[in-house]
Amino acid sequence: MITTLVFSHDDMPALLKDAYPNSTSENRERYAVHLLDTAWAYSINRPLRLSHWLAQLGHESGELKHSEEIASGRAYEWRKDLGHTKAGDGVKHKGYGPFQITGKYNQTKYFKYIGRPELINTPKVIATNPAMGADAAGWFWMYGASVNLNSLADKDNVTLITKLINGGYNGLADRKRLLSLCKKAVDRHGTLKVQTTLNALSARGSRWPSLRVDGAFGPQTASVVREMQAEYAIKPTGDVDIKTWTKIKELLA
Image 1 (cartoon, one colour):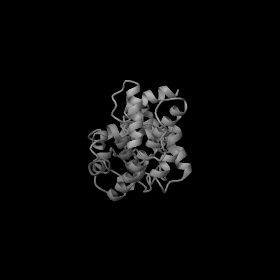
Image 2 (cartoon, one colour):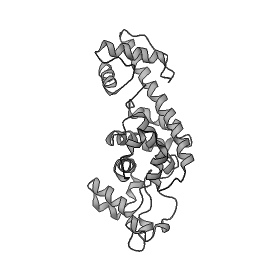
Image 3 (spheres, one colour):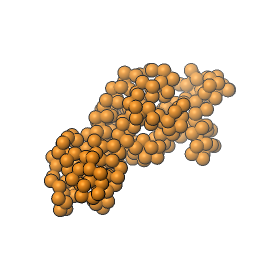
Image 4 (cartoon, helix red, strand yellow):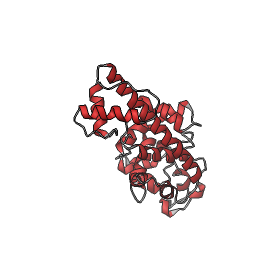
């Protein structure tokens, strides 16, 4: 089992291709680096957390197709709960970014968080700047709902996560579909990373045997991880936790 993120920027486009089969290579490249940076910045640092976050983000963005809400935003006019107190607020402050950060109230909170309160005058920047769009998605995940959604991801509770993001259960079936894809993609690409990295160390003279690189974290992979852990005085669980992965990267450097 892998319990920490092991991905580099270069790994993300292929992971996103499996997670979002309807996405384009252009959109995957546009967001790949920023999504990984954001995941680390907002403690989306475990495979299950990343899977849930990517699943919700994939639904909200149409698998990275939309960085701006398709609807005009007129339905949000005079919505005081969104901070809309004058004509035009609904249109101006409709959903932006891959997480569709919606409403003047939420957008104001985000821009204050990043120290750029003046951007509330041009909220569309969340849609046009992919780094900011990804960061806003991380901010909402940690701070925008009534609880830190990492805690619900740890419990694998897609239904409640959806309720807190959407206000209801719109698109729940699609969110579950994407969650299944994201779990498989995160697990497969994480395992491929671990296997290829351990094999690189084996080729340099490490004592453990080479692994079949198949993206499946089975008994052989766990056994080699335990050998590596025992050799470097790490508790030999066979799981790749942050301490184990840090040591593996150190050895490879």
